[in-house]
Image 1 (cartoon, rainbow, N blue to C red):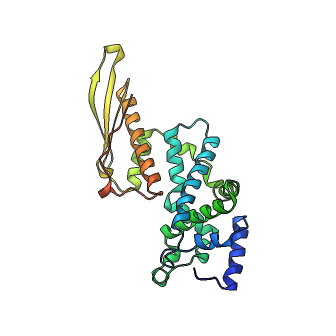
Image 2: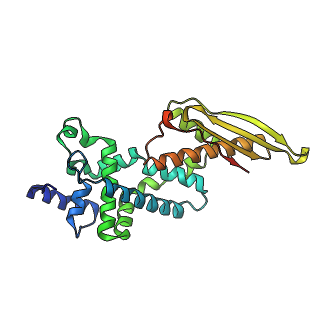
Image 3: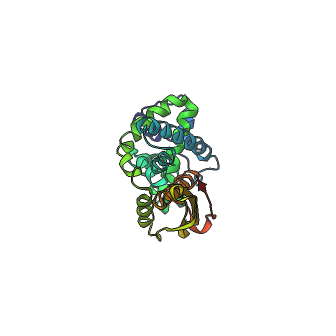
Length: 253
């Protein structure tokens, strides 16, 4: 791996000060800042570690901050915080772009400010800190970078699920969901409604049951939101690709 110049080493000292952590093995930090366009030995493996560490720590913080929020809503909150755009913004605020090592092609095409590169680098730095010093300094860094961002999320996720799904799709410029009653069973005083929520532009479909049509619609919308959160989480916070998404069915009682 190419060595850094003395000035670049000084810059790493400044970066460590911003991170609130001093590396025992500085090569890990160098590696975290190395994009694949710069070297075959790059930050992708550290990014893998950092993604897992960040998801765990953010999830743990949200669990403590919002004791009344259910699992599906917590998933949405976590997805909002670890999505690529959010991580890129955190990286920019940290000034991480100045420390990246990029190939000439990426430098010429604005790679230093590309959201995906910044988000990946932030995760890689988290992974490097974990491999150098364990979970505690990672926890300290999450507190430093994400505490303010975690505040005030509850009001958003506790909205009616149908409202949240509609607002999400509208923000993405997508068609609104449709709801269809596919079954009604039970005696008059014990009716059970089965409602299907379709989101064709995301290739998602969820079916849920409840004692009223409105409650079943809410439950189905909530299931769709949970699936969207899962897809965002599995894709590193990137919005799911509509053309490549598979049809998904989910039922809840």
